[in-house]
Length: 123
Image (cartoon, rainbow, N blue to C red; front, side, top):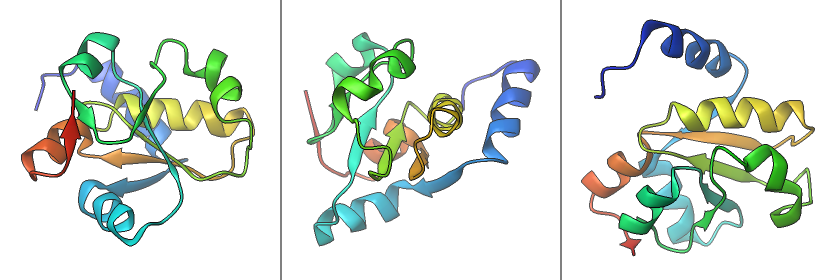
């Protein structure tokens, strides 16, 4: 676990009170079942380039609010966001909900948890 600042953790915990969370095992199981949802990697582009979840789409955290409608215009579509560990994705999920996206969740554990579990990744 990275050593995050208290103020950062405070806003993450505030966001987590308003959003839905899932976890790497549940997302992997749902993918295996063929459930239909968008899996969106919001990490930095350099992180994405080193490896990402197979078939995920990339919309960086710095631009997701600006660009989400270009990639996913259906505000009722299920969207699962992930970052490195589940903190940045919680903040982004909170913001997308404020924008009217009604079926957004954050994947707790993020890419690090996914890779540690040995689930499918690509570069």
